[in-house]
Image 1 (cartoon, one colour):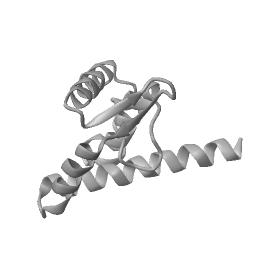
Image 2 (image 1 turned 90 degrees about the horizontal axis):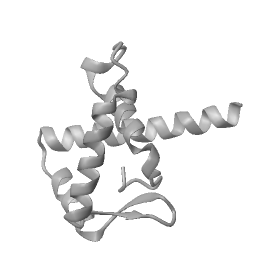
Image 3 (image 1 turned 30 degrees about the vertical axis):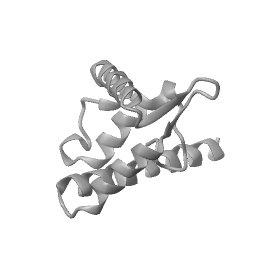
Length: 112
């Protein structure tokens, strides 16, 4: 998410992670679990952000309230995507569903 052009707001990351997982993984599509609203997922997302920030893979810009990927983080993601394996496939699918969620939100705002 931090690698995409649309940098997510820190306050929305948990919701975006849930919506992206719901949209990209077959087991959650049409599920009554509503992963996007899961408190457990939000706690895990905060822990993941804390880890990624301490590992210097992302930066949390407190002034703007957005996530940004570091150069080291870009290298890690690019290397993971360079292989032809399940991880690269899943990262690509989740990145695409994140873009779709952002576009859908933007379209919803324009309609209202």
